[in-house]
Amino acid sequence: MPASDPTDQATPDAQPEQRHSHVLIIGGGMAGMAAAIKLKQQFGIDDWHLYDNREDFGGTWEAVRYPGCGSDVPGMWYSLSTDLNPNWTQSYPVQEENRAYLHGVAAKRGLRDHATFSALVQSLVWDDESKMWTVSAHDIHTGRQYRHTARLVLMAIGGLVLPQWPSINFEAFAGPCMHTAEWDPAVEVAGKRVVVIGNGSSGAQLVPALLAAGATVTQIVHSAHWMVPRALDKGLYKVYQAVLRRSTLLMTALRWVMAGVVDLQFPRFTTASGARGERARQQAEATAEAYMRSQAPERYHDILVPKFRIGCKRTIFDNGYLASLHDPNVVLVRDDVVEVTADAVVTKTATYPADVIAVATGFNYYNLYARIDIRGRDGSISLEERWSRDGMYAYETTMVDGYPNLFFLGGPNHATGHFSVICTIENVLLYVAAVAERVLRGTATTIEVAPGAYAQWCETIASALKDTVFSTPFGGCTSWYVYGGHNSTAYPWSQVTFWRRMTHPQWAELLLDGRPMTAPARRRWAWVGAGAVAAAVVCALLV
Image (cartoon, rainbow, N blue to C red; front, side, top):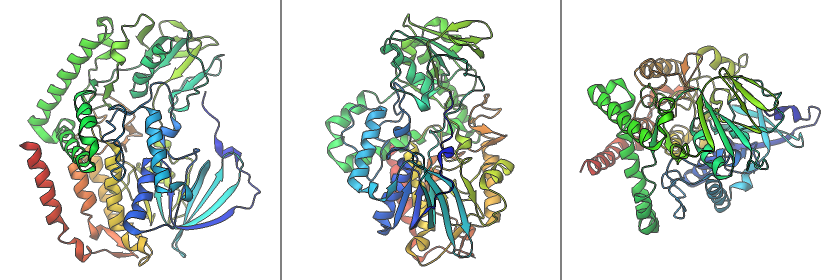
């Protein structure tokens, strides 16, 4: 069942502890950790603090622990560029290994000395007189309150944390009922009848693990998903183990090559690529369909194979799910749940007995900031209220006008259907380091996006998204990418474009201490060197 709101545990009458730091980071996952490392490495800043409502660093990998949970991006690429890991034990690391890696980075970098855990942030309020943010937070266990002021705030709240519960009443069920985002490892599933609701990435990882643990599984799904094999599961990982992991330079080069090769897939996500994109889509769909039909039982083909374009929903990298459907202890049905009783899940057409219910319906991306009252220069309206009214957007995925010195890492429209989110976040940090440099160094007090530039960005990205497959009429599906008529999830251009925009800010669209910015002298010709590097990478990929 849905967990209680931890904000109810605050102690309203307690005097808050007063704190201050030059920079405040909210969120202790990969984005928050990357930001902390960036502050130290590039600017020598030790005057920073971090709040996270979990017990330690790790973000999604600290919070989400369902059986079979793991990365669907190769570990060789799914790691911080500052802390490459030569010791991955498998090409697609499981939750425990990802968590251990991040804990190791935190220990190595001394990040815990700057962090407060089990702390839920309730509000951020901008004071235009002091040019400071005031952040209110409290300990979710003790109710202890914190009042923290900071010049600059980095929002590093990950999107894969809050569970998305379906509109079903589970209260009558007598047994354990868990969302994959809030899994209780103490629940025994061996010999139990487990009904799994949902078949996205978490559902596809969960089912084989439940079967391996001795459960009998009924999976109830609402729609299909495109699935492809984990292409790097064997060959490249063997090369990585034998050769590449022995050299940081070789591991870095591998990441660049992987990024370039993967981004060549982007044309299939947009109609702007014309006939080339259509050929890429048709080829990708044909390849995926052939794989799915070759792996899954024939009786499930009509349930599994989608009718929409590949990329409209997030593509699933198969970890053995399709093959597991041959197991006699699993049944797959496409139906709608209408009721949950004390010992069963009732659909429109049948009743399925259950000892345990596992809800694998994804994450609630659009309510990430609903519990945080963020108020900028116009204190009469919160950011959540503004986004609900106008659509959830952020300039260059990271800034909102009227909210000075506030940057989102992994903000609206940062996600792609084909790339590593860590690379995306590190590119955003390149942008933050460039445009906020003077504020970080203390030679300026505010940096923000001009209102006109923000409005133009919102129009441009909304228009560009209409020409993509991401939950559009052209894509042919509906998905969590879109909420309230706005797609605030997907990025409509390639990651080469994203990198270029992050490393080449539109300075005139930004305000430093209220005045339009100009490019720093040392950056005006930086595009020459960057262009040469990009050209070399492209040439290497084409040879």
